[in-house]
Amino acid sequence: MISLEKEKIYYNALNLIFETNYLFLKKLYQKFGSFVKIYQEIPNLSVSQKIFERFKKTDPFLEFEKLKRKKIVLILFFEKNFPKILKETQNFPLGLYVLSSLPLKEIFYSPSIAVVGTRKATNYGKEIAKRFSFELASLGFNIISGLASGIDTCAHQGAIEGRGKTIAVLGSGIDLIYPQINLSLSQKIKNQGAIISEYPLGSPPMPYHFPERNRIISGLSLGILVVEAPKKSGALITAKFGLEDGREIFTIPGSIFWKNFEGNHNLIKKGAKLVENIEDVLEEIKDQVQIELPKKEIRLTFKNNQEKEVFEIIKNSNEGIEFDKISINSKISPEKVASILSLLEVKGFIKEIKGKYYPLTKL
Image (cartoon, rainbow, N blue to C red; front, side):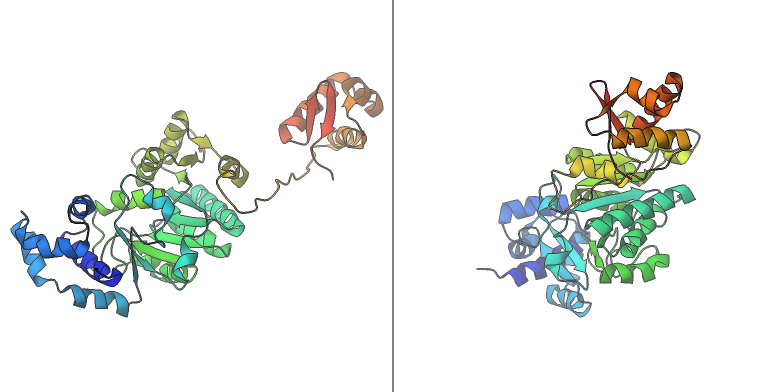
């Protein structure tokens, strides 16, 4: 029987030899049922000369020692620590390289939300990415993003500031942090979450790696929040994977004059949920999570004393109160009362049920 460690040693070697061609490797695994056996069969396979040369130059044990020295853990798709939610996707990776100061079982334990968007983000988008990530991480959600500049960076920062966990999915080997400006941030992520990749050590951040890694960002998450995305954005690729995998898609609205939000608005047209606060996100996923969600707090702010007076009358009524009685008790004209009631309902302070008005919160 082949040991788990041997399977990892030879998977890592195959990943280097085939340059993370996960679809081809998956077909070979289905045929041979073992990474060790695939490696042994390479001389008999119909492969290019380039691949055969890499096969001859690659020392599986030496390459695996490099992972050990850097304290990088490799988990294969059939291990119990491999994230179940990711394995349920159509094109899951066969292995994940993980760098973290946390125990492996803690990294993927909590439910996750992906927060993604453009590298060339506006201050508006950056603020929203940080705020949503901060609040969601504070509740116990993992924040998944790609460590890119712009929205990704703010998502990771928000999660760290919220004292929650965050996972950065790279489009390169873990030893080649990209962009380099986020090297310091990656250390914080390592201590408060994990840096993961399907690419072996030494893999450069090739352009085609990023769409591939976006399927992992999507696959790890219950939902994907697209904060800010122009028409051609990698964030939209993540959302596309999310739709294919049955994930919830959330998006932030922006001005119709902002090109950076054209992708967001197209997603809304296609059925993505427009969100303005984390309660909008939680409402959609509340049946899928096992963490205690906060009760929505309504902050009572009144435009003027008449609004406050009408609310007080409704709040002090024990069994609801009719429109006429509100008008009489307040001594405000019926027309004005009607306007105030409409506004209080929009604010979520009151609710009209069968001709009576009830308070939804108390001062």
